[in-house]
Length: 440
Image (cartoon, rainbow, N blue to C red; front, side):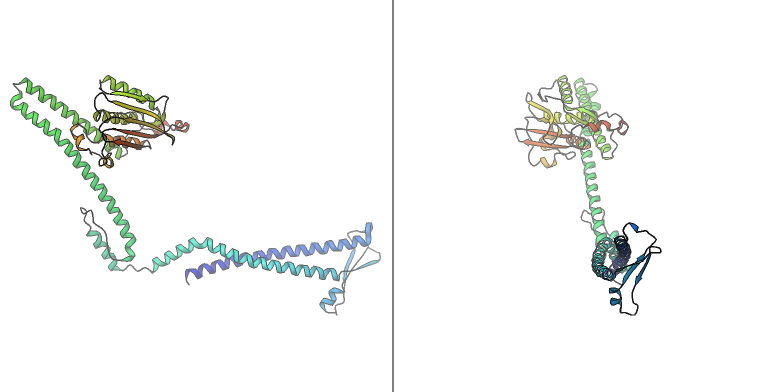
């Protein structure tokens, strides 16, 4: 039996059972109505004839001629009643009974029509409710009819064994239409694995490249010291200073790599609380004034701006953007720091400079790890700062907007969720231990 016939059979049986119960209920209602109608009619006749002398224990009977046809018998039927020991009263009841029978015929016809309509409607609803089961049954039937012979399994095994791990274009293909879904799933997994492998390879390659230069410089100055620096104070001083500078660069690079590695593994401590971004700007500017920067900082934040996040992380992201602004803008130029709320209700923190700007070619790669445009490679950066700032912003469920124009300047804007009162209910136990940022 096909699944459609099976579903129709089930729906028909369920609908029939429902309609039979409905008809039974209608018959019971009809019986109650007829009984009540006859009782009320008899009571009305007795009350009219006897008046106040009526009592419940009357003697009652129907008088009819059993030799007549049924219809004639009903038409001539009389209803007789009398008080105990009193005279009999006779009332013609035949016409009343015929009128009641005609009315009940109309009622029964109407009930039959209702039952038929209910049967059809209930069957449609039953089929609708059974449609998910029908789809499951059809799928199961299709699977049961699918033949996975031994050759197909061997083809799948050979195709998997022939996939090259090192080939980016490697794809699983067996040539069997029944296995196309499995092939697509495996090929999507292979693509994701190759993407992850490519990113990891590039990350390791870039890290090795970045570490190779300072190691070569330190090695070169160490050889210079071993040959001539022992007796020449100038050579010794130059070598020691250069080695210390390169060691500091290596330390900063390693700390940044560890930060990103911990972040990718989900092991970076995160201690969110209510943070005033305006106070964050003022604190950062005071620190830059202490180190004697030659740039002019202008703050645009007239009122407190609150977000819910890790204050140390946000300050680190602000330092990264401010350091870039200092690095790529001329001395004495103005760097503008802003804090406020966006029209979308986000808490914003922006750093704007009047420097060289970013070219359209570099913009898509701006937040890639180790990516630096050619002019930037001469300024001592690691190419990880913006990647860290992006990670911190996304950790706070925000995003970064960048606007830049060559020779006019660049503006980085952190868009962060504004502080809400319900944020204060977040348990401090859910936050990790206090976060101590590395000294980048």
